[in-house]
Image 1: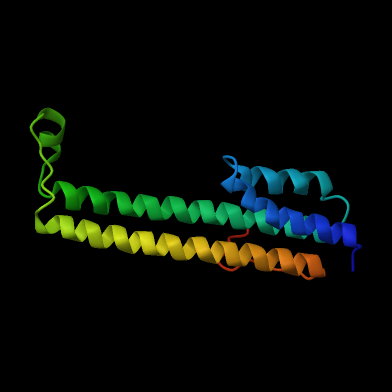
Image 2: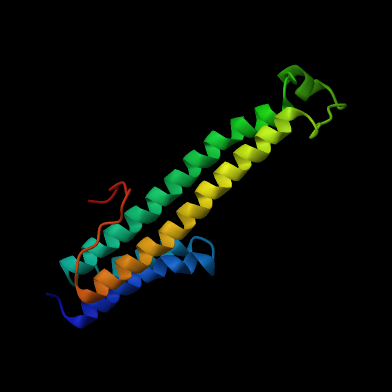
Amino acid sequence: MDNSNHKNIATFIHLGIFSKYFFPFGGFIAPILLWTLNKDKSEFIDKNGKEAINFQLSILLYIIVLGTLSIPFFIFNVLGDASLMNLTHNDNIHINMSNPGSFNVLIGASFIGIIALIGFFLEIVFIINAAIKANKGEEYRYPLTIRFLK
């Protein structure tokens, strides 16, 4: 197995994902920076770097899909039967939150929020597991990850 320095670098590549909570796009920048500076040192670092970046790209894709799917649901339930012509040519459109459709919005938003919260906690667990495995010198494959980099 690779020396402890390589294991530490691989661990910090995974833990670098947490930098997204401190600065924008840190979840991409930190792992990519650590990976590109160290990928030639060992195959272990290269594999862990690709895995961490693939995981972040997959999470980004899942968030975009979830957000895209929720937009039409929200629009059609809040605006109800308002036509597109009324939306573009009439300044007197009022959104009535007391209609039954608003309850659907609340249920839908709650459902999407719960899915996002579960995803957030799973992401943290997966990152910590990956860092622990890397520190032990073991390979880790993030679940539900699309392999953009091979």
